[in-house]
Amino acid sequence: MPGRSSLVARLFWTTLLGGGAAFVLGAPAAAATGLCLAALVLHRLDRPRRIRRLIRTLVRQHAPTLALRRRQECFVDAYGNLINDGWVREREYFAERTILPALDAKGFGEDGDVLWDMILASIERAAAAYPLPDEADAPADGIAYERFCAERLREAGWNARATQASGDQGADIVAERAGIRLVVQCKRYGKPVGNGAVQEIAAAMRYWSGDMAAVVSNAGFTPSARKLAAATGVELLHHDDLATLTPVREVGGRKPTRSRARSSVAER
Image (cartoon, rainbow, N blue to C red):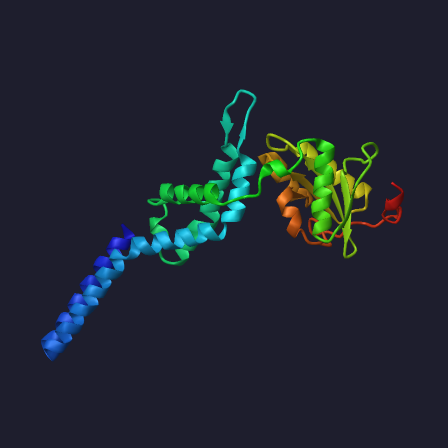
């Protein structure tokens, strides 16, 4: 392994140089060489502990998000089977994009493959152990869920209201804060939301002359929905995210076009 080869090289050169110094300078140099060799060995022996500590630190730092993603991406299908494919992908994504680069930056990159199963297990434990708000707080009824989300937005400082059931053009909530208009579609689902909701809210944002668009759900989102959301600038949120949602003027790198529809929102 590269790590062991590096240690062997350090021990070799320390012994060689220290031995030469000891031959010339005597006992003090020999003692110093011995201390250096001992320090190298102890540092190597401490390597697994330092790696585990780094992994635990990163996982704990992101535990709230990981726990929420675990809840969103795991569901029971119509046959009673637990479907967690989305969570497995999310867990591996976090390991590849967050933990492995951090290990590499600290000089532990060669250990990543060996520790892969341990990394995934650490992520799973942290996500499962982190306490999330009771999901039962979110109403099961679709209309009640829309009002629930609107109230969450109001608590976060948005002037939010649910739209009429008919003629909303895909928008369940229209909210404003600091001159920014947010258009929201709410989905109280038992399985991941597909890209149809993303298409609808992207169109609704244009209809309502919005600055931001979001699909809010208690469940997760399919890979195709995430891909489309990334391309259209639509936010994919859990209803718990609404408490910290802040206004952003531009969506998808472009400023939305204004129209008279913006001034007539109160009439709809």
